[in-house]
Image 1 (cartoon, rainbow, N blue to C red):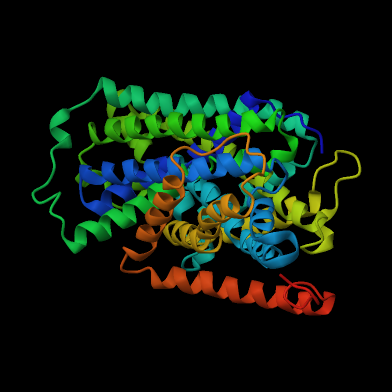
Image 2 (image 1 turned 90 degrees about the horizontal axis):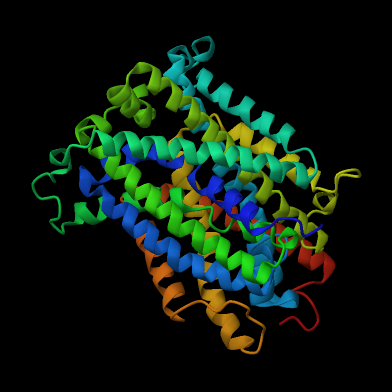
Length: 456
């Protein structure tokens, strides 16, 4: 694949992935988790974890600028001919579930804002419980984006700039509306907001999990590492600039919303909760403004899913090309040169996940990623420094080894602080067991690690 993605395109794709529809649909969930405006702590803690983790991605991405992102990192960290075969295979296997979950969450959010414009979408399909027209719309949108990505990358990067402009216009409009109609009294904390009780830490853990989901995407550029120009400089800059810009935008947006809409109203159910920024615009500038911002949020969600599906489709391709995944995923489109089998597989699975509940989708996604990817990567960047101290590192993470250790502590806090975390542990466990079983069956047949004569 050609190196045709510049710094500007990389930042736009990263920010589309990060912002997406997440903050527009999860803000009420974060506020509800902590029971008041103190939920801002969740966004701040999420930003700190993102910075620490982003530095790890920056060092690894600059050192190994290949298609596939974490696949390439884990393979090199744990050994191409050793445990890295298993770790990288397991990563791609879990990506077959977590990537479609991430893509589906964006499509579900888009459909929720569509229901604000057309409330009839919230009805059940043919009276079937738990099957709503919003799910059908989300799946259709997913398939439409799949069709749009079925073309060469140069066309896609031009389209990305158009989509990114809509993302910035959306979040900028929300911040402007909030700051021009701001009521500081609404940010008053409820009694006992900062009492350090078990309930406080459980709420903070749940809020940080959701905020972490909203920040994720700063690593998108590493999945396109084989197509980025000057990757040694562009990848770290893209990651760190994206995190800084998005963190500022998120904090401004949350303060803006809570300064206009009482937090008690933010956590109420119904279409208003699902389309909270549309309610903000409706209360400040009238119903027409509410409808316009709902349409812009749908645009933003569309752009995010576009970026997600584009980036994730490169990972199974890289693994298959390396001989460490199903060979069919190594196929490139004969005319446009993109991994069309990988793209189709992830897009179709994501369309199926569009019929699940949003909160369950987000929780499962975050837990699976942390357990089967991020923990291995935080430990791995330290192991790589020990094993290969002379390896070229165009970017070295700051204050080593604090960033990976702090990121690891933050992820562990997210996993274990919530009272209902066991369900997500089961999901991650099933994926880990099935993926490992597939790998070891294949490894035994092919006499690869740990069945190779001189396995390391």
